[in-house]
Length: 204
Image (cartoon, rainbow, N blue to C red):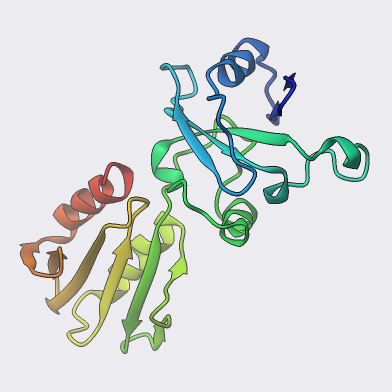
């Protein structure tokens, strides 16, 4: 933890102790941090593969709660991330859902867990979501894509961390249509579709 007159910065890891990396993280943090929203800044290449750090204010996390409540007012949690894991505009509720269900943020050796929101309807499996969509792990999305194969009246709509949207359709067995920007259609095999989705969710 690093303290200044205005803020306390906390870095937490589980299963690894790397003081040098933690110090590098807090030293790169910008001076202007807000208690009302998250902040993202980039970091130098490192052995964990992280590209950025997400900083969240005390209302977003429970660190030191119950022990040092009086000193939490300016306590910011610094979380090393892969850029595609967070948009940087998460509300407190969405952030808590992501770290509870999707991303083990304190495990620095974790696989990349891209943030995706999925809206889908599959009459074949009778599964689906409402129009607001749900946060979904990438392997689960790929399973839903497989389930869509040949379901002419079904669809899967995917929003990545940048807020970009693609739609997947399957007009016939083993044929998929990827729709970008609501209009640009591309017919793909399943393997080529997965390649395109990899690029979309990981890089945008």
